Image: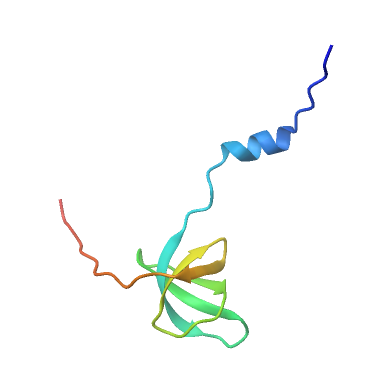
Length: 78
């Protein structure tokens, strides 16, 4: 009879969704390898990474993933 080894932690972790990728604008460069990012929803985060103030960036898991395109945003009221 074959024995099947199951990693229960890995199976549980696979059920969880990935961290969301957020889009924001860098407001402050702190000079210590971190920046403050203002999110489109109104929140702010201090994340790892360096870039210039005013740059649009993607953020995931507390770090900058890369540059985001600067696109117009519209508020639609329903």
